[in-house]
Length: 218
Image 1 (cartoon, rainbow, N blue to C red):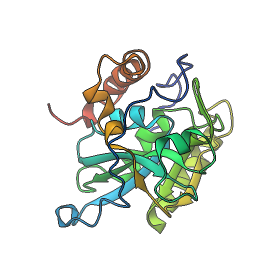
Image 2 (cartoon, rainbow, N blue to C red):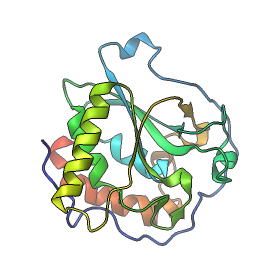
Image 3 (cartoon, helix red, strand yellow):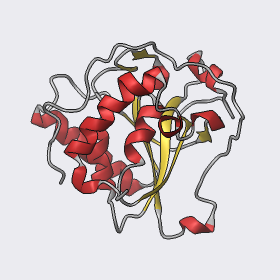
């Protein structure tokens, strides 16, 4: 069981414009990363913790995580665009889908990071980012992931680690659509962007201090 590291955690109210600055998409939408043989013997996890730029920036730093793709999941519109998701009519959440090596980092450890790096008690909101696309979500790929996610959610609620009840959605993965190319590795490619400087970097700095033993080597 992971340690309850939530009190005094990484989240907080970060005032910044909701919905990200626009850029010209160079769309490359696909359904899954797991059809490639290079990912055999690895596993996949799909999490939503608000803005996928933030989520990607955090999880790509973990040892054992081989690939992180920002995208959309949980809705009813096929191949949605960023603009459609921002319009709040698709049902999709902004998520990241990661391919990881369970021999290096377990799903339990990914859940520990998940609960720590965002506020799972705010419905459809993370800081100033408001809307159903920013909801807290775990889209599980198998029964084992479902069992662990539900177990830890229940235990965290019972522990009183959060002042409010956890509202994280735990649902089976039914779809995943990779976001437009310009969203991928956004923090790495746009370090001077205002959202990256004022929202992502402070969160990432705190994350690297708390989880320094789980970080990949530079």
